[in-house]
Image (cartoon, rainbow over all chains, first blue to last red; front, top):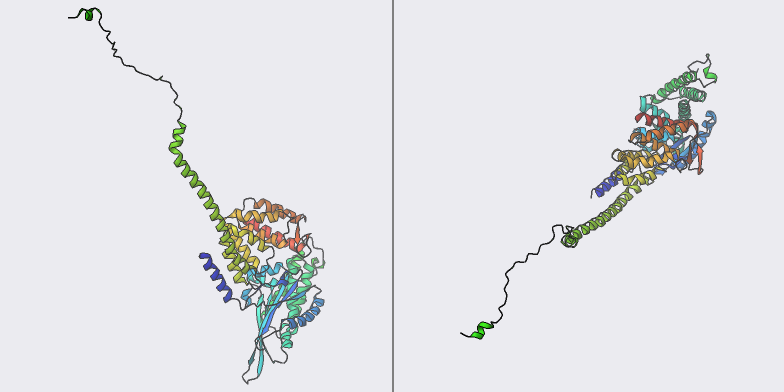
Length: 251
Length: 222
């Protein structure tokens, strides 16, 4: 009897939370560093734009890969719909981190009207930068998971969304920061320094940085300095960072 | 008076008054009268033997019923835990309810761990920890065998989960095993099963670092 009641409770819990949640994604098990692109759905057209957006982003990320010099995959995760940053708990982020996930992007758009009755696309794009989120949960550093809201004219939904996800190099800055942070934790000082300095530079170039971007730019700067400090303390390291003349700051 | 009767009297019967006492020897056989005892106790013996066999059969039957009930009860929860659309809350709820079955749930949970992902792994580890708090042996034996048998088809992620749970559960010989495991990582002799290639491969430096950090954490908790 008690087990039957327990089953009913579990079933009800499933029903209540089935709409928007993080569900398993087989791509998480793929080897190598990766960026997960969750469902980005629009209620206006009831159209799932995941595949078209993924292919566009994939091409976009090829450029970032070339710039970063890192083998990075972008993998779609159908039906995976985080409700917000709070979904990314410590246990989940740890599991994503050990499986090589660097970043996860998700979003939702709705069609609204402004005060003059003109149609607008209101979109919220969520980002979680896994190594940064892990640091955030441990020591309250820069935000590792956040949502960037945006309003745009509904010319082409896919184009708008692509612009939202990769606003003026934002995605490149995030990717460089996560790769650099991960390299730093693996004591690959030279690689870490290169990526973190690139991230800092890209954050300063953002045309309309959010508060999170500003904070992340400063965090990239701090980590870049940590790479030099770590390299100097590491007796097995013989690269250029161990030389006396290398400054802590990137510029 | 008749003379004949006086000279030839008729013979008189002799009469002897005596008492015959039959005495048994004092040291006769004092052994147990088994037939009598068996006769006396046979109903009780029969009842006891009958009760024993009845109880044994009933216990066996009840155990089978319990196992069947456990399997039936766990099946639904396992289906939920392994379903493609399970989310964090549901995975935790299903694994937590599975943990309430106690030691019988360990085998399916460890099996589920073999291909668990970012959603299911924390839930399964939590359930194994919960069982291990009350029944350490039920959890320690299978998890320690994962780390002991490097020829087993266990991925490094499964090794990681085993290390993390062993760190939290009081397993008698875990410390020695974890120290040997840490040495194997340092010596770079450790190999784990790679499901992608179906081969046993040495750990990459990054994975070795991750596992070593988990082993050190587990040893610190011991």
